[in-house]
Structure formats: C-alpha cells, structure tokens
Image 1 (cartoon, rainbow, N blue to C red):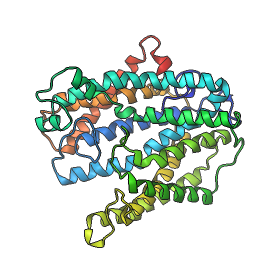
Image 2 (image 1 turned 60 degrees about the horizontal axis):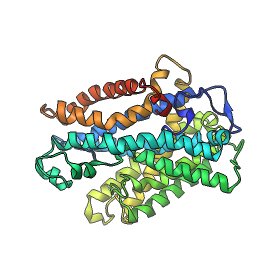
Image 3 (image 1 turned 180 degrees about the vertical axis):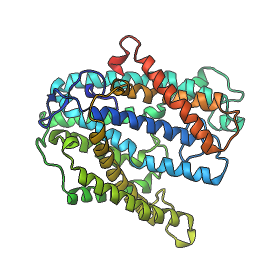
Length: 400
C-alpha cells in the first residue's frame, strides 16, 4: 500500500535489479494495487451482508446458500490478498532506503503512514462507528460498550476511536521500522543484488515453512481472534514473510523476472489444494465425529490442513496475479493516473461502505447476494470518486 514514493504519484521511478531507482515505472503494480483495493472493498461489503468476518455494520444473510457463498469469497480473499499488499510494499523499500537514508526514510514513513493513520483513528473511525451503531439494534450497541440510544459525548468518542482497516498501515509501519533497524545494524547492506528467482524446490520449502508457522501460531491465536487491534494476527507469518520476500525480490527484480510458466503451475497447485486440503479441512470441521477439530486453530488436524491450504493458495495466487497483470497491464493506459488513488480509496472505504449499507440500503429487503451486488455497484465508484476528490485537496497527494 502507500509506504513509498514508488507507490504514489511521486516520482515516476521504480526499482532496478541493483536496488537503485530506475527511469521506467512498473505500471502493472499500480493497476494491481488498485485491483486489490477493489477486492478489499468487495470483501468488506460481503462481510456486511453475511460473509464470515467482522465489520462495523452487518446484516444477517437471508439464507444459508448466500452465507456460504459470501463466506467462501471472504475466506479465499483472506488467504492471500493482504499478504500480496505487504510483498508489494516491501518490494519498494530497499530503493527508497538507499535513496534517502535511515533518517529521511523514517520521516517519509511517518508522513505517508502516520498522518493517514492518525486521521482515520481519531476522526474517520469514530464517524464510521456512529453511523453504523445508529442503525444497529440496541442489544448490539450496548454489547459494544455504548449506551442506547446512542449519544455523542466524550466517553462514547473514546470508545469509538480505533484503527479499523488501517491496521494494515499500522503493521506496515512496524515492518518498515524493523527493516530500517536491520539495514542500520548491517551497515546499510541491502544484500541479494542480482539474486536469481527461486526454484520450485525453494518455493515449495517456503510454503511448508509458512504453513507450519501459521499452524503453530493459530494454536495460540485462532482464526478471527482480534489481538491488539489487529483483526488477522493469525496471518502474521504470511504478512511478515511476504514483506521480507518483497525486500529480497527487489534486489533481483523478481516481479519482472518471474517465469510466467512457473506462476501458472503454482496457480494450478493452488487450485488443486483448494479442491483437496480446503475441502478436507471443512469436512473435518463440520463432521465432529471425525475428531479432526476446527480449522480455526488450537492445534487441530483440520487447522493443519487449512494452514497448508492457505499458504499454498497465498503463494500460488499471488504469483499468478502478478504474472497476469505484468502481461496485460504494464503500460500507462487511460486509467493509470486514476489507479493512483488506491491508497485514498483504501482509507475511505469503511465510512463509504457503512454509510451506503446502514443509511441508504438498510430499508431495502432483498436476497443477500442481490443486495451485495447492488451495494457493490454503488460503493465501488463512490469510494474511488471520493478518493479522487480528496487527493485534489492541496498537499493531499503528497501523503496519499
């Protein structure tokens, strides 16, 4: 997401295989980030109408089929898309650090990550909470620590501040700070210059290590548990490892050198894993007589199968999507400049989704899948339009 100058409109340069800035921009990365933000918006909209997960405002699904389909959509998304965000962010960190040095690098991160985070935490999140809770049943409002009817006072304001979707920005800053400390400790040696793209064996080993790490962490932090304000800390091994892979990949220019044939093969492997490991983990969770336990964690066999699946899917899907966008969207095009509004769209998505769902569409009673589609048609263009206008505010594009 927005962490480096390569991720916004300033300047039109990106990373070369030596880790220094190069004159040509990798346009497909901008399109890819924009597409991922659209997927995040759809993800949260799906949760709103009955998919698995948590969000500010939700409505119960009208039938089990809608709930299942929306939940499958959110689960497949959760398996890979935020990890790819971290990888892309890590990919541009080495060149930016080389260009600016530790002090200026941290200063830039504080501006690009810290300012939006603080605005969301203390302004946009309270607004989103109050809009959502003003349209929720009294029992849900009270359960979240508010009085009903909802009143605006100092106590309710402090109850409503939070990071929301900007947990990503918060975690990214922690990773970036860790990267700076590592570069300083190693005396600014980036390492890995010209490193060839990893072999099938190395990628396979990475998937197994990632799956084992996720499985072990979920013994303590099960899926869907919120810890320290992070809604998906159970995926920390993926987020951290993908960020690190991104920093290593930058030195070898892996986004450009990854073989398309390899990406397709790992995508096929991801599909096979979905038809086997995922299905088995779901069966083990539903059929209690098997004794496999729940896929959400606690050291169960279903959790092991699920960890193997989502690690395989994360790698295979990420490789395939990068290869696809590199092949089809690596030129400016008519929508390129508009795609640069992705960071602002990510920040503004929550209040837009909640306003449309809770205020505009809450009185419309139709099947959940239809309502999800209707909401998506309204929310996507509205969010991107708001992002475009916000970035027109003087100096806003320097942050967003």
